[in-house]
Image (cartoon, rainbow, N blue to C red; front, top):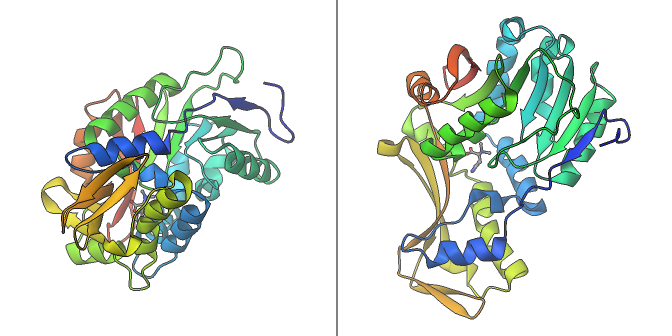
Length: 322
Ligand code: AVJ
């Protein structure tokens, strides 16, 4: 784990990136068909997601930025001096800039992501601009992350950073397990800053996942394209329609690929048939109230200390400590 280029260190925990073929077959075999949203993000899917974040209807990304920047001072004042920042699923690491002064007071910035190439590229760029040592860890936050002894500096405390409302992709019980593991990883005295998309008017929510340009539909259907191209699946993309709606009782946007007519997906010598109207469930995006998020947090070693929202209270930056 020697220094890697401009990085203080690069630690490769060799995450299990998942087996698209196995997961697709398993998901299609179930009585309620589903597949993990992580398979949206090949190169094309990641580009489509970038386009989504710039759509007029898609408020989360720009609203999160507003909430963080509006309260940048208060947020950085609430972060312990000398904390080492550990970003979960750092991706392109653009959001670390939102911590502005928080970074200046930090002792290090550690980017963690499952995508090795993307991670190294963005961490190296950050290393040349941030005023603190930058390191990278290739790992999967769905599994425990153990820092090998002596590899990492021992900061006074870690600040976990998990913007993007990615936590909303998890079922509540999965989010609880995730937060429990993060408490073990970051250790006692840690803080955790999480971006949380809030419950709001149903029409606003549904418009955000049904944009007029059809970018979200293309993003959803990218899964079918990947099945064709990478798994050699036989299917008719035009038999499926993008279907996204707010499920009020579960407080979540659900995305599905809905069969317009009876059809089938053939894969690996097996045929999975769809009745007209039957769906392949591709994503959940949970929306919280500050209270419902606190109730979830209270099932873990963390406590919600503070939260800040944009002026419409559409999005919250939540600061936890354990
Ligand atoms: C990246 C999980 C935050 O749930 O809003 C955007 C993904 N899906 N449009 C979200 C997504 C459809 C996004 N997250």
